[in-house]
Length: 99
Image (cartoon, rainbow, N blue to C red; front, side):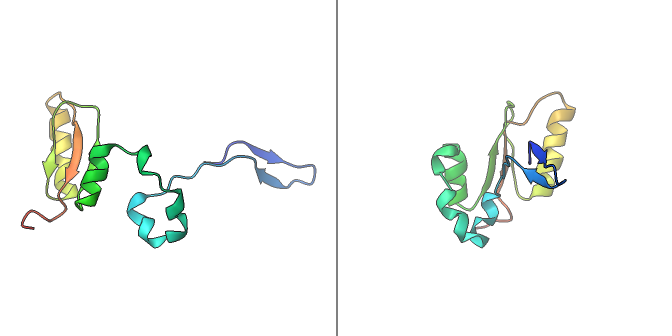
């Protein structure tokens, strides 16, 4: 996100402020950003899941969702919504059901 943008008298465009969100799952590709990673900014359960090799995202609903694959997760969360509830989390075991 770049906001605000400033146009100089010479019609140059300058970004005065910018915000960047880094994907934690890609952090291993960008080790130069690792020093900016602060575990204190994350939910404790999300950190524990990450250490275990699981994909977990806390949501605001009331129905827990544990699946094996992101496609199944999306379908399951759609069904939860269809029946009038909201998912409380996204927990994808990611093909590790037999591990």
